[in-house]
Each structure stands twice: as structure tokens, then as C-alpha cells.
Image (tube, rainbow over the protein chains, first blue to last red):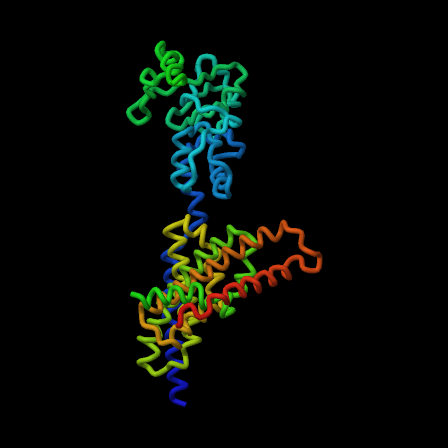
Length: 199
Length: 193
């Protein structure tokens, strides 16, 4: 009889210890939401432009997590595709031309003396980067603007320009050394190519 | 060294857990319809089986045996395995989302698999040492993975084959598993363990 009680006690203790550790782990290692979606969302440019066919960057991140192609983000361009490919451990692919081409990064600029204060661009802006009120002139908060172009089309007086962003030390990147590569525009290249093919 | 190799060959081929000892048949039938899920299941099983044999060995040697409670082995092994797998699942979920995506749903699934408990109990029955226990579990898992992946590849072909109507679905799967088991019987006597 004593063995029985002993066995039950040991088993109960074992279960209690395991339960306590699991309970602790459930709090210590709690995961909010789907972490992979957060990581993908972090890599996307957050322009909320909708060129990928989703209503914003977060929905696209969720779609990628569910297996959608990673090459549908024109504002992010090649850099984003590479980062996503690294994260998800898949092959980096070229940008899907169907969703738009990678352009020079721009920001919106409102010519303030022409603005009539219609607030249409404010409603179009996905990131609330346009400041202004009805019948007052509007202006763009430069740091908030993602250059998504969505405000240009609704403006009735066409007073919004998309200005290219000046190259800074963070946005500068190496240009391809075009003049070092033999191309058809180089005078010597066709001859050397022909020479190779005849051999 | 040779005996470790013998344990591996014995568990992978000769005493294959699925086809010779008929343990772990439900995941073998359940997740073998697609090669992709079979791969995920194999990885999870390898992980869980190795871990389970390690933990159950430690529990038995350092807790049950000193206390003279060897008869509690089955129930305490279930407890230990369930705990360890659940704990690792939480840690993996937190630290490596990608690995969790691959193993995720399979980890809790495999926990209560009879092959896992079978390996833990057989380890005690054969009085395997520490390293032997781990190798035995790992070998069993490799054998399980091998058979599961082979079988999944076969089933993917069977689905497009022209099977007579009465044999369609589970019936032809059972028959092909039986034939596969016959083939694995051919390894009997290769290693004497």
C-alpha cells in the first residue's frame, strides 16, 4: 500500500513540475501573431501603394507568408526582393513587370500657390502625409511621404509634382560599370564577338 | 564503433519500426498521400524520436530506478515525452519561425505516436546505454522516414494509376504497404540484434 502512495506522489510531483515549466514557457516564449508576417512586413517599403494587388503592405506580407510570389513590390524593387529571398530562403527573382517597374524614388510636392484646398489628395494619401484643411492650402510632410503617386491623380488642378529624392549617403548605391562591359554600343565588341563565334 | 553501426543498420533496415514491427502505422498511412507532408513529418519524427529516447533514458535511469518505481515507466514516459515535445515546440515557435513552419503542426501530432513510446520502452527492455539509446531512437526515426518517403512517392504514383474500382483509395494503399513490408522482410538475418 505504501508503494502505491509513493508512486502516486512521485507521478503527481513529476506532472506538477512539468506543468509549472510549461506554464512558465507559455508566458516566457509567447508569440504575438505570426512572427514571419511581421518580419516580412518590416522588409516591405511601407508605401501602402497597392501596386502588388493588395490593399497595403501588411496584407501583402500575409500573402507572402502564405506562399505568394515575392516579386510584386515595385517601390521596394530589387533590394526588397533580395531581402525577402534571404529571409524566406528562396531564390531571388526578377521584379514582376505586371505590377509596375522600379522607378526612381520620388516624393510628392504641392505647388502651394495653385492649391485650392479641396482635400482630395488628403483622402487619397494612404500614410496621412498631407497636411491641410478645406479651403486652406495643403502641404506634404516630406518625412512621411512614401512616393506612392496616389495623390497625383485626384488633384483637380494638377498642382502636385513628384520630385526625385536627392541621393544621400544612405540611398546611394554603386552604378553598374556599363563602359567596362562589352556591349553592342562599344565599337570593338561586335568584331570580337564575331571573332569568337568563327573559331 | 561497430556496434553503433550495427544498431543503426538494425533499426533502419532489419527491424524497421513501421514495416517489420508495425509501430507508427497511423502517420504512415495518414500523411503519406503527399511527398511534401511526408518530408515534414519525417523531419519532425526524427527530432521527436531522438529527443524522446534521450529523455526517457534519463528519466528511467536517474528517477525511476533509484526510487524502485520501474513499473511506472510507461505512464512517466508518456508524461516526459509530451512535456519535452511541447516545450521544444514553444521554443522553436519563438526562436525560429521558419523551422516552426516546416515542423509546426507535425510536432504535437507525433508526440503520442506509438512508435515514439515503443522506442522508449524497447530501449529499457534491451537495457541500452546512453549513446545506444539515442542511436536506437535516431535509427528508428531514419527507418521511419525512409519508409514514409518511399511510400509517399509510391502513393503519388498510385493516385494517377488505373486502379480497379474496388481497390481504389485506402485498399490499394494497404496492399502496397503489405508488399513493401514483404520486401523489407528480406533484410531479416542481416544483423543479429
